[in-house]
Length: 333
Image 1 (cartoon, rainbow, N blue to C red):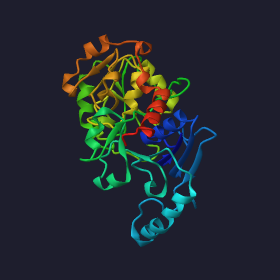
Image 2 (image 1 turned 90 degrees about the vertical axis):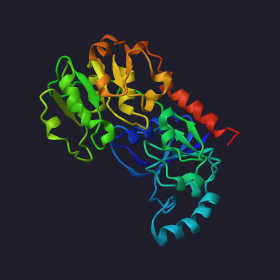
Image 3 (image 1 turned 90 degrees about the horizontal axis):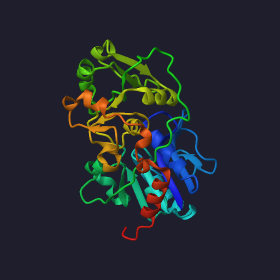
């Protein structure tokens, strides 16, 4: 299977960067070309040696995406038909919302766009075969009249080993991992949760690329321990040792932090969003709530189950690869 993927960044530390890394790694036995706006460093920058990587500013792809202005439109009008003739046919083209739109520059019978937690503009409808939803509740990102298909990303180990953070961590604690860049992450509920929870909260967030504005009542809260820019090894340590992982997020495209908790933490409490909108993710030790007020911490902690008792086939790389094969060769498109 020949696959072309267009994304914003290869490398970095965010969910979109990890999604690209995971897809490419799961497809290492296939023929894969990746086109990104920027190639960064970081834990998700390494790809299989056979994977070809180019930037959208390279000679082959320059101006292929939708760019503003007369120059961009001329480049597309003149160069894209030539690109279609020069490039080999792909079985499937996958584009994330942050990637350059190469749909008109390639030959691919199946073109998928991944919403990445965003509503797909109706104007993109003509360029794509379907929206590749990362979770069942991603239907809210699908414009009326556009087809969709379910394609959960594969989840590899966060890190091959665990490593304790350099700062002091309580012996018993609850864990949450998110960047406070949007109200949908449930930031406004965190102070109340910290006041009512039976254990202190370790909150991991990042300042690697953008400094987020954290309200003073959370920054100085005496029951919240801030861990900034934790490495994947340190995150694994915290996931494995927390009494419970909790997420107050109102909406997720996939929800990498909660997927990691499903893999490593004994107890998980979350809304039924992203990966947890899939019934297959509702495994032992998982508590679903519709609001933070519903959290009964005694029940959450009592429900703890070893992660090894869970069926995590939903997250398996082989399942992702097989699903993409099915989508690429679906005669109903």
